[in-house]
Amino acid sequence: MTTTHGPQAPSLAAAPERARTVATRAAAAVCVAGRDPSRPIAHATTAAGQVLVLVPGDGEVAAALEAAPDRDVSALLMVSDRSPVPLRDPVRATLWLSGWLTPVPEADRRAAAVSFADVRPEEALLDVGGAATLLRLDLAEVVLREGGGCAEISPADYVAARPDPVAAVEDRMLRHLDVDHPEVLALLGSAVARSGVPVAAGERVRPLGLDRFGYRLRIEGASGHRDLRVPFPRPLTCAGQVQPATAQLLCALRAGLTRRE
Image (cartoon, rainbow, N blue to C red; front, side, top):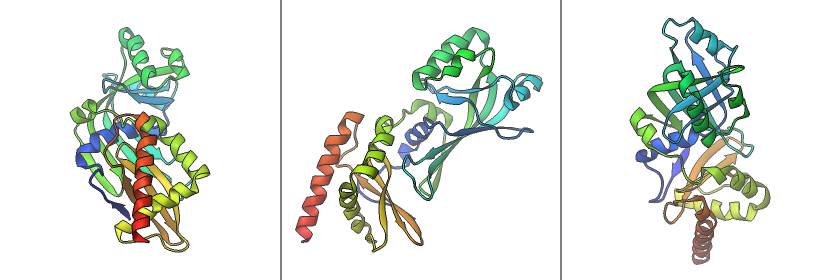
């Protein structure tokens, strides 16, 4: 069960941003008709919104393209967003990017590799044209599954969106919170009472996510789990605002506990 509360929780309008954020995750698989699914060396959505996929030059995907009359094939790139902290169900979201794969023309490889490296530095980019093949995925459909819901996003909206500005520090912040600050997790967990289902004895509050809208918590119990969003007072615009916004949020939660006492 996922529970979201607060006026600053992301709406469906934020789905393209969430999709671009999930696209920054490294775990991915590429599926081409008639071939077994395989893992690319790396993938990236460039700042301009172009989806690029780096695959082994002697792999299944490259072979499928070699055999295709027009050197393009329909394909699906599936990206998984996994929690940076150990949870029972670690997959937070899945992004499906489908369309047509085609090799990046030799004349465009250098520029494409630079755009790739700008968002995801990858040593194997130096092997493009040899041990590695750089492909372009021209989008036809974008689907994001997150928090128990599914959203279909137009390719144009996906291209125009930008990743959440907090994504770059999320993993580090959540690991630090999980290992070093149980008292902060307990305080954030006090907001669960607002959902009408407070944390029960035997349940554990875990950090699930962090974005510009606030924290996401995982409440783990013996029989399952539920998720909850604890929003910041207002959405953030950069990663540098996370610590002051967190301090303001915790201060408000402490004041709320004091009033209830």
